Image (cartoon, rainbow, N blue to C red; front, side, top):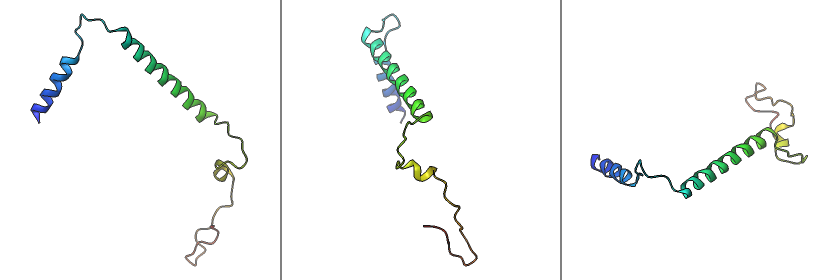
Length: 84
């Protein structure tokens, strides 16, 4: 187990940049693109959570949001009486 960890760490160490070596422009571009995509996804997720914009009267969420009379779960006979 220890040898696998040592090999993995040595491979990672060999791949690391030298402290004197500057990162390439493509690395900056990749990181900037990833940041933009993450920020866009976060903004859209918050927008759709706060204001979903669905106004159809037959949308599936209406079955949850419409108030229905509370179900009687037990009338003493052990059977449910007001459930579909």
